[in-house]
Picture 1 (cartoon, helix red, strand yellow):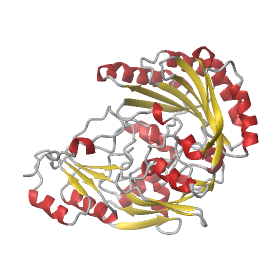
Picture 2 (cartoon, one colour):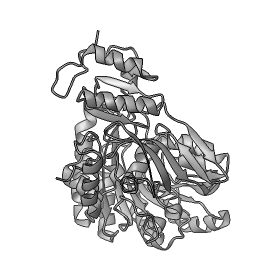
Picture 3 (cartoon, helix red, strand yellow):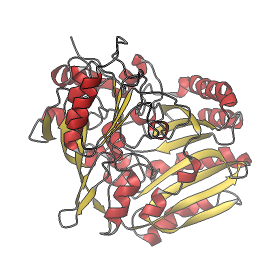
Picture 4 (cartoon, one colour):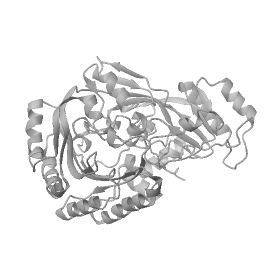
Length: 462
């Protein structure tokens, strides 16, 4: 018997014979609300998300993705697409509709001679690093190893190697895409070049990418880690970060964070990675290691996969998360004073405020022409509320929202797409900036009915 939760958008049940037809042509798993695997299958990283899809189609390969898209379109079902399931807004899930679940498609295939990596859409950054590291290579991608490569790349992708080697989307060479009509197509600089432009920074608006080909770079050992200081040194640490990063070599990426130690003591830290010569890395790090007497100095030579997993424990599975972010026009003394004050008000020791500095290859004129719009603002402020007790939800969300409102006078008006939580249409439009009209025209061409809309949504141009 078909579970009653599987419904059309108009709330009429889907005919059980249609499910049977899909099952006969589907190699992966079809998980219904009545199945024992359902509650596990609908869980994602952010414990604040609790949604109940009518069907989870866990795909075994590209043919399953095509079948799932055609089934959803034929039956007018709301579609969510799950890759790594690490998106803070929980767009990997929906209520009542279908989740096209790519988490079982985790293959990573390295060509060391060409320095390229073919990656399936369910792979995490840790999966990619594990395979590329065997060959002394790395793909620029994120800072948390459990992040899914697909969502990261489609939204841009900022990480430890971005200042030297560009965004994740800048290193994307080609894609295989299932469109809203269920067609399988290629996209690169010469084939469907307009679609390829939109996939690099346009989010999940234009189709489901079932295969990514990335450029990899010679990165094996790095000089990185973190230095932690008492919270009363926060202003000094943030000012040192502001003053030094604009002139730092592109080999070096560093973030300043107001956080708490594992035992709940408020602190401030510099987290960074130097991917060039280790001796040079030690020299570049020195001013950040001598601001005051540190609580912890854990800067050392590290294999890059270890660097990539350095802060994984700070974002545990199942914790409740609500994020805000904003690019800053500048890091003035006044803005730093405000950020410190806001950090001191955080109701949860798990929460953090992180000032990220980009520049370098992200902002250089020779970066590829992509849909990622926020190239010029250098400082991005991440406001990351995190807690474990559902009873604390309201006050933690209120803190994050109030903090975002408070920093508005210092904001550039731009946003980092992959940091967006449940934001309004104006914020999404601002994240895409001047590229929005071109993206809207592209949406009209490849997804005129807005079939893929559980994303940072671009509406089709009329």
